[in-house]
Image 1 (spheres, one colour):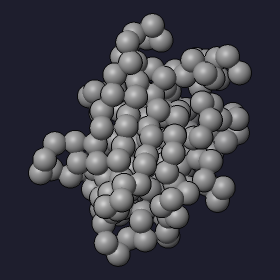
Image 2: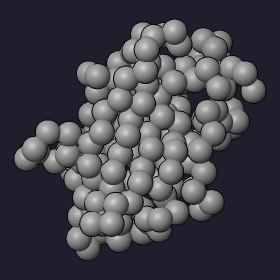
Image 3: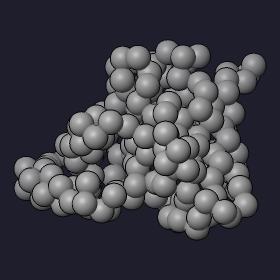
Length: 178
């Protein structure tokens, strides 16, 4: 795996040299919310503190009757043999964003910015970012991505103003068995 990802620092250096980013991260034009619901494997991320040692990370979304997005984040901390852990934040679509910007609430009353910044036309891959460029998540409907698609997504993350040297590939046991 290390050999395959040796190109990440080179891409990051090239993108950082020409990177100036606007203060607000640009969302996709629109999101078909029912189509976006379901399971997303976390392929790579610049993780929050709780996610730093995540294995088998999967983010699941379900649209509630009240219009809020019920989220379950499942992962194993530190290894494939660790017991599963979960977090269950609730997402709320920010009005006027065509479903592309959410407030994600882990603790009341604070809502974290959650912006869908890239979305494959077939809803097979997405990138979630934040204007602070502190956290980012590359997710897919499958536990791994083809190398060319992974490289393209990482380049897109860099173009959005992220330091891609901080990206962590999330180990997925389902990917190893494919």
